[in-house]
Length: 254
Image (cartoon, rainbow, N blue to C red; front, side):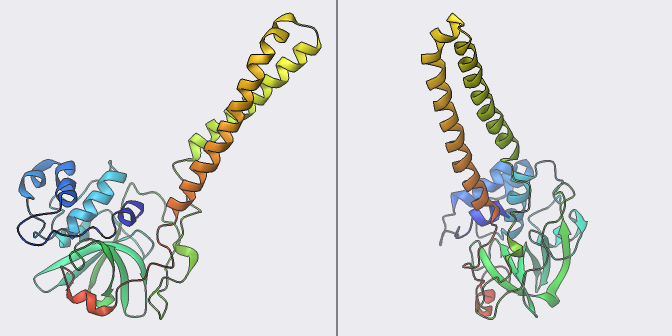
C-alpha cells in the first residue's frame, strides 16, 4: 500500500506514446510480460498490482498471467476486507484488480491502476467483487474495515499502519546502541582521567568531542528517519477522498 500510495497520479500518455514508468514496471518484473507489454493502452491494473507486490514482497508468487485481473482471484489466500487486501472485480468483458482502501454501504474504495487511466482511489460496487485476497508472505493483516464518509473521505484512523513494525525498527536499535556506547565511552574516559591515567587525559580532547558529535548525529538520524517512517506508515490520509461514482465510468473499471 505504501508503494501504491507513492504511485498515485501516475497517468497514461495520450496517443501513440506510453508512460515510461508503467512500461518500466513490466521490464522490472521480467519474464514474458517484459517483452509483451509495450503500450500503456493495454489494460494495466494487474501490472500495477504485480509491481506493488513484486517490489515489496519479492518472495510472493504472482499469478502466471498477472495482466489478467481475473487471475488475481486465486492469488495468495482468502481474507476479509482489510487495508491492502487485493480486491478482484468482474466487469463486462473482463475484470479489475486493486487494493482495499475503505468502503461504504454499496462500494469498496479501491486504490488501483488504470482507474480513469491513472493510479488513484475510486469507488467500485461491492456486488461485482469476486475475490478478496492476501499475500501468503504479507504477514499479519493489520487494522480492519475503513468507512468512507458521506463527503467521500476515509473516516477512521484505523487505516493508519502506525501499529505495524516498520522497516526502520532494526536500524533504530542500532542507533540507540551507538548512542549509549558513545556515552559509555565518554564516561570511561572521564573516569580514567580522574584516576590519573595519562592516556585518558591525552585522548580526552579528541574522544569526548567526537563522542558528543556522534550522539548528536544519532539523535538527528533517529528523529529524521523516525519521522519519515511514521509518515510512510500512514497509507492513506483523511484528505485523500475517492472519486465519485462518475469516475468509475472511465478507464478499465467500468
